[in-house]
Amino acid sequence: MNSREIKFRGRRSDTKEWVYGHYYVAVEGIRICHCIVENRDTKYYVDYDSIGQFTGLKDMNGKEIYEGDVVEYKNTKYKICWSPEGMMFFAHLITKTGHFLNAERMSDCEVIGNIYQEKVIKN
Image (cartoon, rainbow, N blue to C red; front, side, top):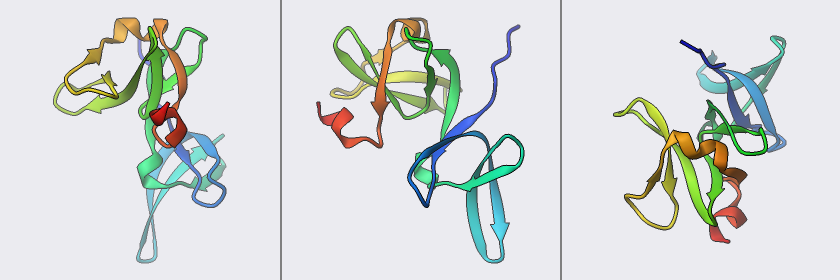
């Protein structure tokens, strides 16, 4: 059985830049902080709503696919989601409900952005 690398990405709270690494929740005083750690020693505070897990899959260009990414397949946009019921990642059609793209097609897709970039969803 092949195992995938478990890692996350999140948007920094201060600069809004994307960071990649290990995710953890820290309690600092009475505050709960969501953090991504890069290279074991660099900790960044990230916006909770921006955190997405690496799916273990790559697109047609070799780019890693994360939860929250928007991918394009045959001129159609899909959002990468996690299904707690199915315990799996899947691609959900953005413009309609009930339409999905299975994991076997992910290598034929292209990551064009993520759900935090409004222009990606609208176009």
